[in-house]
Amino acid sequence: MTRNEDRIAGLLLAAGGGRRLGGRPKALLEHRGRPLVEHAVEVLRAAGCARVHVVLGAAAEVVRERAELTGCVLVDNPDWEQGMGSSLRAGLASLAGTGASAALVLLVDQPGIGPAAVARVLAAYKDGTSLVSAAYDGVRGHPVLFGASHWAGIAATATGDRGARDYLKTHEDAITLVECGDVAQAYDIDTRGDLVHLE
Image 1 (cartoon, rainbow, N blue to C red):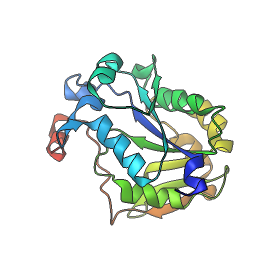
Image 2: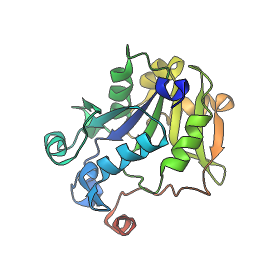
Image 3: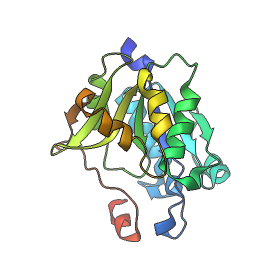
Image 4: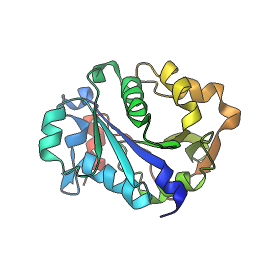
């Protein structure tokens, strides 16, 4: 593991309640015989994130009981129903004072994104001012990497389900895009129809 990877924390947003999935928390959806949240943590670790913070919300206690998350920092987001923005704020706040110089953000409901894509985004990190995003056929997507100098600005603008979208739009010139369309598929597990992607 390089020193850079040691300074980048994996930040997994796994608080969603799966409203369009009949209220099934996304973290607990089964994929390859285990909860999605376990799968996503393993992706971050396999790509090189030694430290992983996991933001929980819907059914947080049940997720703690059922999922194997040893070694992760578990962050409760009591405001998870307000959307992904609240989870991003909670996750970034949990990294304050840890010495991390960047956060690599992955969403729990995108199992088509594996270690290869995450590692590419990690490799584009330069320092605490870095802004890096995976791209799929040139279109920005996840995962994204936020240098620590951007955390306050992102937290100030992360509302509803927009996450960091508004911040990234106003800092477009600073973003390093890393094409990942050849190694990952950026679909979301949002509706019952999307469940076909789970194995």
